[in-house]
Image (spheres, rainbow, N blue to C red):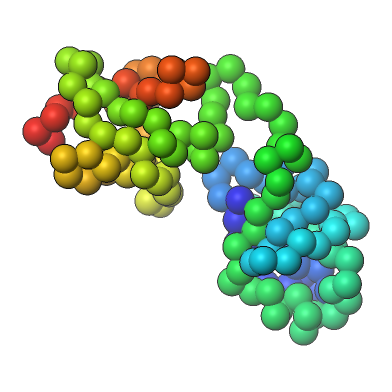
Length: 155
């Protein structure tokens, strides 16, 4: 959901650079997994393009800085249900990807942000990187575990 970017103030608050769209979920979660450890969040708020939080047991700037660079995650059950036409990117991993001609391109291996948009890495006869944008992704059917895209098999 993000990465610890540093400390915030001198009382042990941490600053998290959230992944795109994760600000609200991080600010509302009562537990953050940082690296392999679970921390209770006593206070959190959105601050500019980051989320700042006070974690139980982290009481100094130095302790907060010790977490810098580590990934931040929350339990799935702590997240709100995505709205209509919205998906958690982790739910896309493992879905079959077909193009508009019905040709199977492969299976989503991972989803990542390239600085401009999300991208799905599709593993099939070869690896394809397909941008996650409305002009390319035409249908997502989670119950059938498939994604339909406007993408040529030879691209």
